[in-house]
Image (cartoon, rainbow, N blue to C red; front, side, top):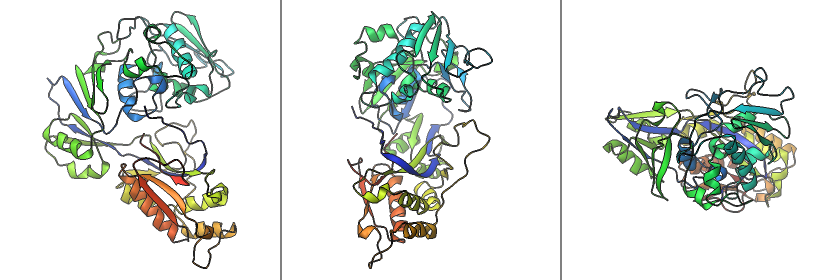
Length: 439
């Protein structure tokens, strides 16, 4: 299994974009009698275990096989909706203590897992303790819970009531509960019957199977090829929650294959590159849906890089002013993106009256002035940093990244900075600057 790591050495980032690049092709309209949905997906699946999942591919079967305590309405992520909890806790209804440290949840009764086991408070307590004890051995995803919880934080009040006592006040706590990775509720009886919890280790059975309360359950999974989901016969939710009898998700599909499948009708839904969205807008029986997604792309700076200048704040500020934001949006993202004012996507509610003011824009004159003032002047050859290049990693298989790298390289060259671009299938062990890996 691939390990998804967080680069903790990145202390400053170029705030780049939130991109509405998740363009799906949906055959329009699907026949009313259609019982199987076929999804041609760009993603691979790393695991089916919510406690160790931290990638977009794994999220899809997990989100559809499991439930969380809270969820989001279909139309917004600025509000919550009850899921396995019957109401959203507030100070007014007694669900949140006055000091903001204790949260009480009343649970839905009569719910069953896909194997018929009853859902109770024991499953909720077990789920969160399991996430913390496993500690995301492959993915590191446990940080979402360990930032404000420990194994003693979650207690069972009665069969259908649980209580969380936070280690400190944490305003986004409810958001973490609505996150299926890692907080989808698992069947404690099923997990214990199949390996249980081992500290700091994954569970191979949970990696390959699902037992949740969601509308679907995984019937089969062939890594790198496809995963098949069928209706959960015990699903507690509205009948519309599982519209299709079967969902077939084709994995790691190349764009050309997805486009062909959409045109031919083999695919009900297909991921396509946003660069192809316009060309397919007039295709017969194809409906192209381009929807903004709460996704942030940024350039990471490694302050522990072997290139010592990256530890200098003035250098990082200059690099931020030298980034060609508008050119990147127009050329790398075909206009399907917008500048960010901060690290949080625009679709995510901050609880403030307004978004932060945008700080950086493309200004080579200002970037050069900052470098000059900090003593990083040009040498006789017109190069800064003594002519030593900055190393930049871009993933060649993510189509927009090489374009971003080329645009940035050209901009920096104008102020005397050499950018050594490495366009590779995956990031190397060391870098000075890097674009994100696949999510």
